[in-house]
Length: 353
Image (cartoon, rainbow, N blue to C red; front, side):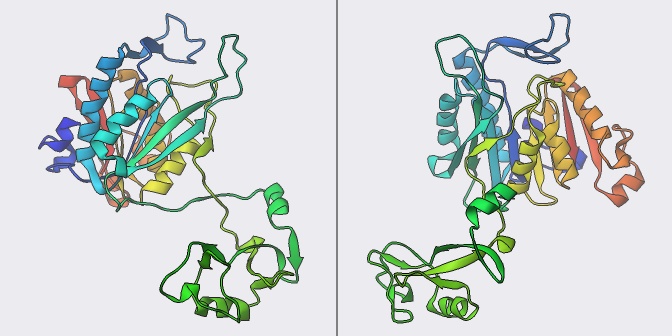
């Protein structure tokens, strides 16, 4: 990553400082273990070593601290960081992130359901989750609202009423809080907001809703807005995600691709530069590629880089047949794909620029 900040970067670009809109990382968790290719439960001692996680807590936090400093320098003012971690060291890592990014730039601690319920005999609750710390560099961060699809079961539960336009539900037209100035506390249609509340929208907007037949009056004379099932964008995504990982990973840290796709869609734009500097199995880079993002991938593991190369070659675009050269056709039709092998530090950087 230091090379990306200095004049040793890819594609003759002077520096990547302040240029990356999204960083996702899934670093080691300070487990003091050696991870081998294949399932973490069944990999044999003969399997190739994927990576070594031989840290104590102090060395681990130091290792991560300096990388987070570099990550922040690489992030643009629109940049976001999603840091995947477990509960054993996650609270220590959050303190690091608070120091580096500022507590005011902490957005969410996302709980991720990672597997099916466990039946271990140890004296503890089953561990079915890990966490993703979501930080931003500034309040200008990219945010593309993505909604969860509403299932048929959800539709029947939520949209129980019906008229000639279809199934609908109703929501309040007022919200908590008293408005001292402005029209949201004024009378509309001979009615003031309930005590301690104010209108959610302007009086003009209330008139429009009434004219369009989108206000339903309760028996007590309280107006509520009609929301039809066909007009619903979906469900607001909350901070508990269920994205279970495959039970047959090709790499020990392989994460659910649908989860990675969500992160990329929410916190970057088409043509944004995104990065995973612990790219492991390559799921993040693959999803970034398929979503039209420019990407940088970094990993110290040679096995991880081999897997990344294989994954990208399998993508639906055919111009990545030779990962070591940039053809005129690929440059003209899409964006250039580059692999730089930094032999001095035994690290390979994959990028689309």
